[in-house]
Length: 337
Image (cartoon, rainbow, N blue to C red; front, top):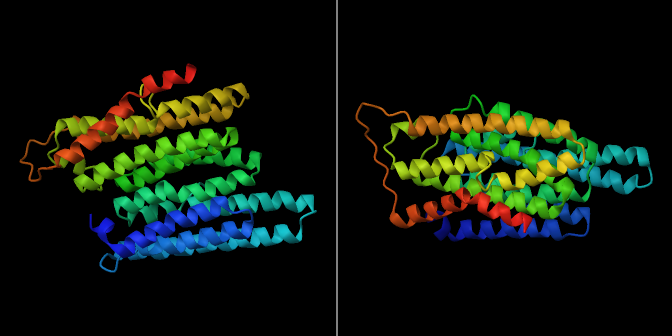
């Protein structure tokens, strides 16, 4: 609540939203670049905290990475203006612009900064970085993209996001690798249509918001905390539903946009990409189920010192959104009407 009542923070949140709108509604590359810079300068004060060294370090790392990506983007758009008619250079420039956007949103193979920075953030900032901060780069990527390059990046994202999350014990790092994996699906959805990308992005943001909100309410940051703490079993069940929905297991709502993407990939004979996507989704489900098992099935015999108390209004809020996740197959049948 302190974050919401703080007028300085509210001002920076407003600028953060406004800068994204500047970038996506601009009719020139320079306007897009200005929007990205305002976005960066508004997000830095939200991350940094003088009382927490990890947050200060995360804000400095984030600033350096985003500045390098911005310089790369500015260099690319200036080269594009100079060499407009050179078609050989045009191919290189598309890859340069795409790469700078991928660096900005933490896409593989430019992802190494992403889990490290998320590790030093609060849950609210994690949610912003994994959802809102991806809007501008994804939309700019859709304006000017190299499809073959994007297909390669999609597969790399899916593989790295799945394999990177296997040996993680930190929930923030685990969600960051999950975000990289979902980024591969998002890129494939933007190849199909912007409407499908919007659907996927909104559903993904919805699931991530529930997860971050639940972990924030419980004050949990690592997997082992989930079975040391004395949780309500209904809360554990809701956590399981949301994890499985985020992984894209068929009866849940998270499977619906993935289903449409798989259909499109099959119709266009992109079976290799589809096979990689599905296999890597199974790996992500494996490490989600591992968390659920440790949370629900393991039970310490020794005395649990911590009892989690969640207020009824927050509890009903989580329950309502978990029900939406679990009733996903009912929503998905409307697709055929």
